[in-house]
Amino acid sequence: MDEKTLQKMLFSLYVVDFDYIAVRYLMAGGFFPRVGSLANIVIDRYIKTFLWSQDRNDLVRQIISWRGNESHNIVRVINICKQEINIGPELSEQEIEVLRNIYKSYCFRYVDFMFAGKDHCEIYMKDMHTIDKICYFFRKKIEEVTPRIEKTPINLLLSGDSIMVKGLSCGNVNMRDLLLFDNLYFK
Image 1 (tube, rainbow, N blue to C red):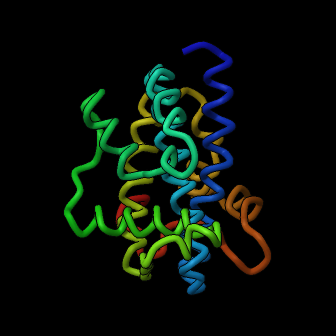
Image 2 (spheres, rainbow, N blue to C red):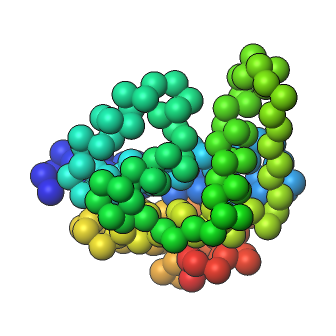
Image 3 (tube, rainbow, N blue to C red):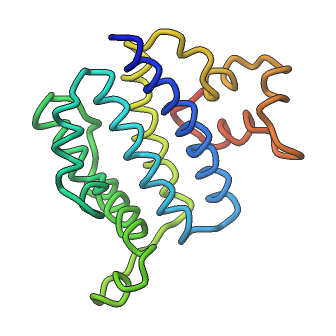
């Protein structure tokens, strides 16, 4: 992996790690409509960063060529990973439906999309387990091939170093506690 790709991946991980923790915060606060849109962005970014780590810019370009909302359709993006490089999480029908709802929530950020059809989406607190599963799966794959990953927010929080945890936390919100709360994957 060349230095430019590594820097792009580390920067992406730094940003998306904070966004992932924000998803957990918003979900815990009951901001379900908004959290779906951000969760879609987080999953999309983890997958594209994973593809960079595999030197599969061709797949990233293919996904981007779908244009518009479709280039962020996380179910379709996961399927292309499974088809093209045989890597992707095993998902139940219920988990796939959760991901479809998250994608719909992402699309609903445009008012015209909301009223274009008679579609709706539902996001629930229990859906966080599916979000955690997907984020953990792709982040773990990135971690396997990326040097210097110990300096990314999630790794710093998981290290338990009290100075780092305090430094990454905001006000009364302990980011480590937020990351670990009811999280079956990141430990």
